Length: 230
Image 1 (cartoon, rainbow, N blue to C red):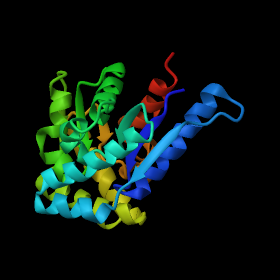
Image 2 (image 1 turned 90 degrees about the vertical axis):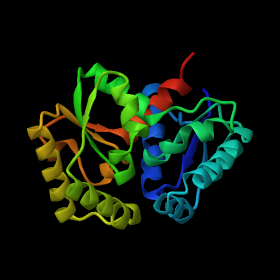
Image 3 (image 1 turned 135 degrees about the vertical axis):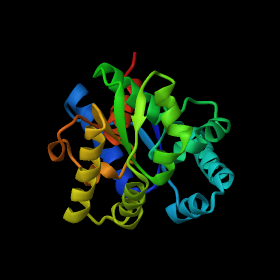
Image 4 (image 1 turned 90 degrees about the horizontal axis):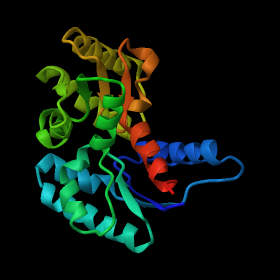
């Protein structure tokens, strides 16, 4: 079994599901008392969020790159960044290490292709929804990516940072996400990406009418596939 490196803490609320899903999946596949080999580096999210809000992405990439080096030095065979947004600096992080970085958007695109989804809605932080670092990984594979209107982008971003990242789950916010998904479906979205690792804490498949692609689940299960490859 390969050792999985997790670069987490962004936020820690969504890093917990990574640990749980990976170990549950290993148990399901191997049975008995089997569990995953995991090295977790959990960063101080306030430092990263400050870089995000100020647009200082290079500094955040440096912080995460050094953390990734620590994960590699501790013996990980590959690394997952446990957040969608910080894949904006994935290339900078990769340049600091010699082991593979498993990109969350690539793993998600694979699942979209398996489901024959060509037009997909994307929910996430305002950075993920409005910038190209994530969407381009999908459009380069022939997919059309739809995002909410500007007002909804701000509402969704606020819910993520002000509520989900601090463990607050509100029914009113769930309804706002449901409304955003409904509008995307009306625009022709065949499925929706939960493109922030916290969104799965709030929104489930049973809450909406189109297929949901939870990036936390997809990414974590991809880690298990790689860890158990022979």
